Length: 633
Image 1 (cartoon, helix red, strand yellow):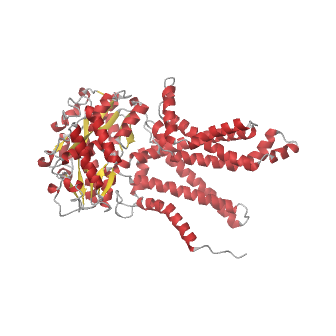
Image 2 (cartoon, helix red, strand yellow):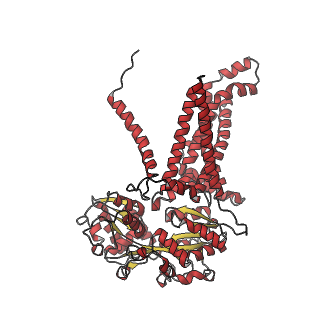
């Protein structure tokens, strides 16, 4: 019978679907070899990100955690799901009871992950009263993943049981086989494909899971999805592209190799035998590489030192410290250190409340969050006598509104918020917020910063009002400024600082409201860009080091804070991140080009129009309502 040629639109549609499937993967693979860290332009072919990945202890530990959780939860869910499927299929339940049980098994499949996560958090909260084993960590993640994977495995195995049917069991019994022998020799061999399929599905679900992991993870148990999410604030690092490329390469190699192996099973030629032998060796090599990466991650897990000094756990943004400083800190103090990452301040608060502040020692948080953290009892007053390097701090960063008596905080880095734009004709000193927010004056597409307190204070600046005003009318007027800007056809909405930076670099937008650190990185890649603190003024922000209210290792926490405030360490931190250092003693060690750069260290005239943001206190509700109005209209 002659084959019929498919219509052109069917073929075109198939190729389009394949392109949509593989082009993003190809883009990630290309970016993993891009020498340009920001990835907005080609910086030459480079394998440095793969080399960096091998030495990135945080990423390797995340890989280890991901594999441990995925493998263990897959084994448990496969065993439980298979037994549940067999029991459900074999037991002669009355129809109504069977339907009810089927619905219960189906419930985790159709229930949103967020509800399962909240249920688990509540359950663990109760169980922690009886055992500390249920503190957030690998165990709670394994239990959480297993709980929702069981249903998926059950349905896959059950569908295979239905396909096999009862006839083969009856035939085996007719041949005098016992029930056990019939299951072992007849049913299970045919059921194997269903069990393997269910296990692979469970493994994949565990690898991909974010929501449940987010709620039940703890220190030293972050998985790759959590690490990737935490890196969004400063943009996805090239190491993540490298890791993603390796995962895709291993997966495709495994799938294609398995398919080729299966196709040659029935062939007896010498070439087929050689092919199968080669594929077996390739499979062993791939497995060995995965195990090597996992073990490397396991060995990078910080443990108590030989001198008995406990691990210091620091909760901060991703890529917010020079990796070499972690090694240096351990060498100088003897304390091993573990970084835990978060992406947004609200996430940090939620993580502390859900898992308990007692799992972290030092928390790096923004100035606008300090009053809330004190009120919630998440941080403790510090003994300044245990931080001798505090004398290095510039007077400007002492007694600030967010902590007038320096009881709870010591500064980490500081920066500003302004406009990154592409216009060589516009002098940064003449730039104004009105020129961006007024639909009649803006010169091109723009995005606003997706941070409520910062952007509303900018709205107040635009109106020449106090950025810390608590007057309801002032706050409403600031919201109206932002609504007017949002109504402009050239406004592309709200984005994080890193994404806004990338949009200007990619020429998607003419301007973006960003932090000066992102502006510095963008100008380093494209010197035609400019950064301005508008003449109406803006905010100066400080990221601060705090001590957890129930820090398990307060001595190590003090040691870390004191180390960061060391003159040379502070300079190394500032040179790496390219934000301003609040450490006056560090200035002689800072790169002269950075010290002379007004984007990082504005001159006195610009500093005069920068203000710290204070806690809004009772006006917090007004700011929240105003922000909700801005985002929802």
